[in-house]
Length: 234
Image 1 (tube, one colour):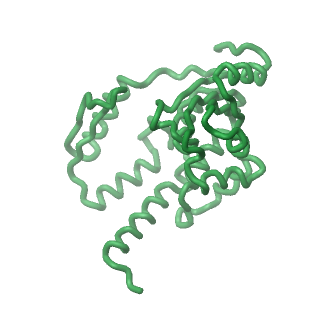
Image 2 (cartoon, one colour):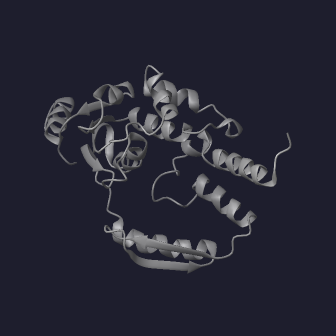
């Protein structure tokens, strides 16, 4: 059966998105929150936007109450760069290497599942020492966020096993949920993660190579045990 124009467009869009989220790009040390310079995903998205003929954008910045506090419009790169500059002035902090890092995903709806919580874990990854403990406090009322995402980690003996496997997948064979699993596996290969939630079955968390705690106090006690002593800033 011949593809309709709409289905051909959707197919090309999916191929473009999967290639943009490929293992090669995710593996880059420049593919991290807050980094645009030499970020392969960002460069690829700029190329796609130019190819599509994008000439004008409007970006907005929200506060904690989801209210618009600033807007930036104009050329694709220029307006986006100004918006990033403004946001950086509001929301960035200096990195402080630490043994135990506590992080949230911004509350509901942002912390509805483990898939979404990985975004917050990347922020903690940036400051947590190798071998340190990351405590993620999240609701997780919706569970994992996807069977494929869950299976990628749960069906491997270790997070490193999945990371080694996925790193060899070329961009033309990227599959849905691969990238989020890859990011989580990367974090788990260098950090011990404790998920704090009383809304998810503990065995789901442990199957994905993390520890589970019902409360922050429980997680903090466990983190101190793992570190063997009270953590001290360098």
